[in-house]
Amino acid sequence: MLFEHLGSASAEGKSAIVILGASGDLAKRKLMPALSVLRKQGMISEDSIITGVGRSKFTDEEFRDRFEISDDFKNQLFYHHGIQGLKDYLNEKGPFQRMIFFLSLPPSSYSGTVEQLYNEGFREEINIVIEKPFGRDYESARKLNESIHRYYPEKQIFRSDHYLAKEAVQNILIFRFANSIFEASWNNNYIESIQISAFETLGVEERGSYFDQAGSIRDMIQNHLLQMLCLITMDPPISLNATDIRVQKTGILKTIEIEEVSRGQYNGYLEEKGVSPDSDTETWAEMKLKINNHRWAGVPIYIRTGKALNRKGTEIGLKFKKRPHALYNAPDGTPSNEIIFKVQPSAGIILQLNGKNPGMDLQLARTDMAFCYNSSFKDEIPEAYQKLLADALKGDHTLFVSSIETETAWQKIDGIMNKGKLIHYDKGCVPKSIFDNIWIDFERYKNTC
Ligand code: NDP
Image (cartoon, rainbow, N blue to C red; front, side, top):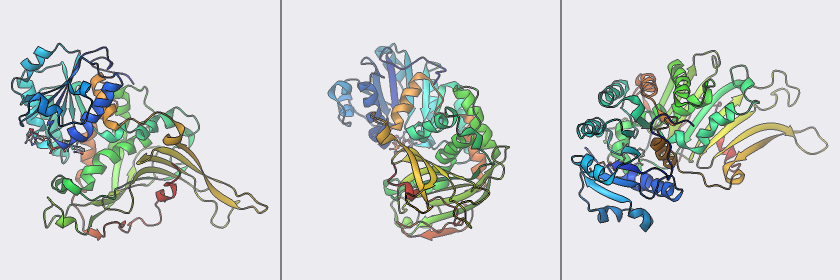
């Protein structure tokens, strides 16, 4: 990975990591544990500081006591009430080789906060990480980009999509472009369909008021699932430079055409805390789309995601066309080959093949060749936020989403949000698919990795 902006993150440099909204859920559950690991690994030096900022009032001690981290690391934590005075405060603790400001805030306050940072005197010395959701439709995303760019150029903005930082997702490009055996078949000559599935067993839990304003299409498809689709389908970039990768991803987003959509809601959703009693927000969405380019013309792409389903799992599958002439298992022919990228909860890549069942008869059996993270590597898989924070410190944009990508994705999604009648399903069940009989049985690979 190349860095574009501020230099490499290592223990050599003194950094300031500022978390705006540090009293919130994301800071507690994800950011601080990730920073603690980066500190242990030496990616953050011992003279660096983590400064929480917010409207809440805490002393440094009170702030430190909110997190379960080592005493050593606690001493690197500080708290500053509000943005006013933050510049002088950090100047006294500096100088810093790099500074990141993580906006762990409700989306409605992104724009105003960026303006406040500028008015406080922060300029090209900072990188700003912005959490999802980035806008709620094309127009709001465009306006948000416009208001941010009034103060800071794109090279200082890091739009987070933590799926991009998951190990299995990062591996998609390596798998495709570091191996020569797949590229020749990675197109409409050989692939019958591409399928992406993201199932959760939990309902909205404590995030009902947030989710009810979003729904599955905004919350999962506009960002995570379309980003993964880009990585699976894009042409090889001319280099691993973030700009070159983004060009290819944007090329895919521009050519997407959504053909059919179905939305659903689980029974009991309307009684969830924070949900409007007459909400028509979807907790399930399924769609068929196509990519209008040479490589993928004619290949249907199916995406589905939902909450309160029968299983937890995010997978990407490529289903290959059957052999044109059935030598084995006539008249139906041999089963299609499949390549499965398991993203979570376990990570791995599986190639489903047909082989001969041992014995005197000529019987075919489906067999899997699997590359599983838990058995292939001793190293622990880093949490996505560790990678995102480390990259933002380095100024590496590769795993962050550009303004054009996010706007183009919203343009595609705008026409389908809140459209069509909702189907209803019981918790723990999967709604009947409108694209029946096409889905890869991802559950079949549950125990493979
Ligand atoms: P919270 O709702 O917990 O808010 C974070 C903090 O923001 C609050 O503690 C509060 O701190 C401050 N805040 C609240 N309202 C305002 C306001 N109007 N203006 C300025 N500050 C405000 O959010 P989360 O921590 O759950 O999430 C932060 C961001 O991360 C959101 O954009 C969310 O969508 C995104 N995200 C969260 C995930 C999660 O698991 N929590 C997962 C993925 C993304 P104070 O009162 O001290 O100022």
